[in-house]
Length: 462
Image (tube, rainbow, N blue to C red; front, side, top):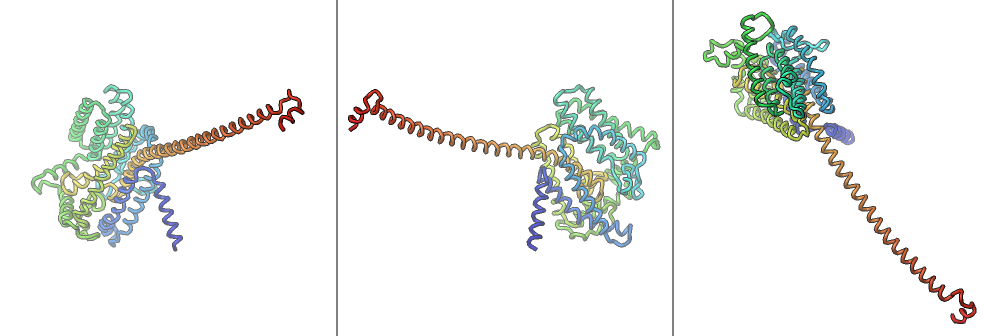
């Protein structure tokens, strides 16, 4: 029994030691993932009743566990890749992402009767995949690559517009018709990356103007030709009207129902909550295990649970800032900011929607909401971030190893010098002995000089 426990302890220690990169980021990610099991299991009972009639949410819990497990495998495998490899990967992956976005826009699947042209079905697996999340990751790395390169040779606005902003606008144009909130978040993050990368402010102002005019033109074209291509402009209008509408009769019934149920769940939670699994509104709130899972968390764990989750995300944001500060290259800094900050901002948007600070957007709570592709895309981003921090950790280890080698070399040199000094002292003693022997021989030679008569020498000696 003791041997088995020791073996498990040793195996766990080896596993932890094999994890490279920022251990604090590893810890926060693991905490969020572990916490997600309880609200997902509780909120999934609604889906179990609707789809199977049994209310048994074990299937959804196991499915979520598989998603989380695969996600951590993704993190582990990606964090082992040197982060500078992603420079070239982003250039190759961006055209592939454009093709996926076009396919998604034209062939997007319908999920539970809703217009979900931002999702595609992965063949043979049966998992829905939101291509815009992958596009965001690739685009952030691409922008970081360009900005780090442009610091060496300052480009003109025309050059930067062709090499940087045209790829950005192509990506946004393919996401915008089906997913306004994601496109807006990506555009905001690219602008922030440009500012951090010291892209000229006057150029950033021009790009903001171009982006605003392009968005308005798109809406005007959709208004003029509503059936020309897939879009969700009407959905955006409904959500904005619901958010700003003063009268209840001006609001869409379905959207109004969602947000009202979420607010009721939050109000029912109080300070300490109703307790794990005791949510009432999970039985009435659509998307309770994904888009509105924060409302269920507050209902079951109260204000304390909500502040705990918020605190974990804020600490994760702080750790991303520390990791970006420690990065020894501009590319590393921009990659951490570009991939880390959207995770936290998406969490804040999800929370803001639940408490009606923001219009309904459909953004999930990263690492907590159920869903395979959303978890996996977040894990890809975290894996790349950990790859950056792993590089810094390797540099620190190399410096420590170098200091150890230098210390060992100094000890060897000191030992050799000490041995040389001892050898010199011994040689001096030998030389003194040789000189003494030589002097003695010289004295004896004086006594037994060959110029004297041997017999006289004997008599003299006597």
